[in-house]
Image (cartoon, rainbow, N blue to C red; front, side, top):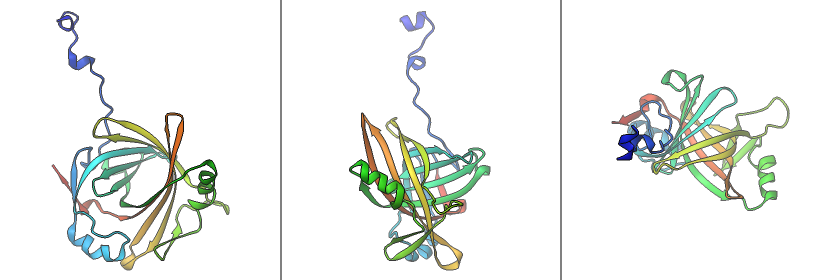
Length: 218
């Protein structure tokens, strides 16, 4: 009643939920299909096995890059994420890279000494060996030391929860057949919970995806 008298509605007084970014038709709560034939040809060379052809987007991450671009991540129910890098805007014309990543391993970092060691010598090194394969560092600095690249990711979840995580990352690659590569991402992640730092080392493997390899469902 009072809302009507003062020209306010319940809809206007409710706090609007932050909107997660959308691109290529991808959005929080949506889903997409992967090209089955391409995955069948590629999977035998990859670290992952049995990638789901149909994937549901359960969370969306967004991180601004120092280069002026944006890192977008669409986290799925298949224990991975579709990552899109843009430069200069958030439309399909600004996309510079699309990869499908899968989480390989997550290790808790329990104390400050372990965290400093991860930042100084674990995350970034010239060659990273995983499962008997050597991956070579991609983001090399001019000098001898190539520190991890730092980004702050804002993550939007389906229940409306929004959180931020500081990430210190290094990208590696190894060659596959037909000029393709498998990528490796090593990241130290730090989230402040209350007055405590929740830290972990996250290792993921991924590969390039072309927009034509993805079909958006509705």
